[in-house]
Structures are given as structure tokens and as C-alpha cells.
Image 1: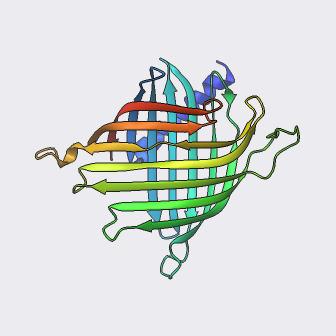
Image 2: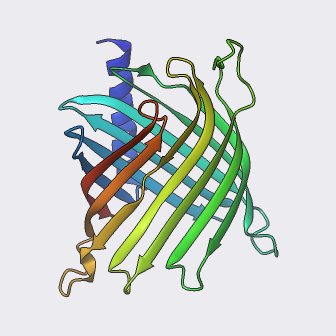
Image 3: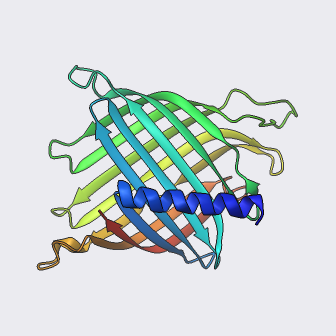
Length: 235
């Protein structure tokens, strides 16, 4: 068993353990363009000192051929103050697949602005971070250290929680000499119909919907759009 396969199995194990312990939802996406599938496990938990969020993506084509995960922590020890909308942000990103090999490990640190509606049916945040990507070589052939990332996240519920519109948008600097670019943008808006609003289905936490991955210089140089059909179970 090679190192890549062992790492993928370890990541799957992490996802399963996380699912049994604290995960908030599991998603299954079928990519209409690439004819492949992705499983996503997400968890968000708030506490007295801030909040923790992570997700794990496993790609199948048809066997597992890629794994990626992000974990982020918000620190806000001043939640009873007038500046409780501001928090300190730390994050790690990494993974690998059978085609690209290991993804660049990334460590981020910055500040997050968060907000919500009075009934919490609409939440949003914007994070500005310094992004450390060890070993990244810029287009000039020198190591690149001045990387950054700006992230926006939202969750909007409509029509008495029948419809959910959520997702994220990332814009960051990361040199890719092989494609002659160093700025990357990706957003993945999701639209869900929540079936637990159907009379008699209150305990069936299933949502059906779609995600559209819109990116520039992420999959390859230039713009790319990849829609999915998806199902989500919320715990």
C-alpha cells in the first residue's frame, strides 16, 4: 500500500470518526461536468471562546482518488463586549489526490467580521488572512512569502426555512508557474430545499439541491464552472 493510499484511508477514517462524534451534515454531490462524485462532511460548533469549523472532501472516480480538508478556529474571548463581531482567525488547509499528488499545505491567520439577523436565519462573515504556503515559488523564480486570502461565508434561509442559500467565496494569492498565474478565485454557492418542512417529515433532515463551483485559475488557467446535483443530511 503506497503512502498516498494510506493517507486517503486515514482521511476517510477521520471523516467517519468526525461524523459519529460532532458532524452537522453530510453531503453527496454528483458533478455533471466531470461525471464524478464528492462526499463532504461539515461540522460547525460555537463555544464560549469562539467557534470551530471543518470540512472534509472525498472525491470518487469511481474509487476514492482525492481527499482535502480545512479546519478553522475563531477566537472571541470578548463575546459580551461591543466588539463581539470581531474575532481572531486561524486555519489549516491540505490534502492530496492521485493526479496532482500532495496539495500545498497552507496556514492562515487573520481577523473575521461576523454578523447575523435578529432570528439567526441569515448569517455571514468576512475574513482577511495572511496565508503561509511553505515552498511556494513565484513567477520570478523566488520563494513567495507575501500571500493573502479573503474569504466570505454566508447562510441565508427563506420562506420559513424551506429554502437555504449558502456557500463561500475565496480570493487568494498563490503562484502557479506552470500556468503563469498567481491569483485564484473560487466560490461554491449552494441552493437547498429542506424536506423536513413537509408535513409529517419533520424528523427527516434531508435536503435536495445543487452547488455550482465557479472559479478562475483554480482548476486550470481561466474561468471554469462545474454544477452538481446534491443531497444533504443534517444532524
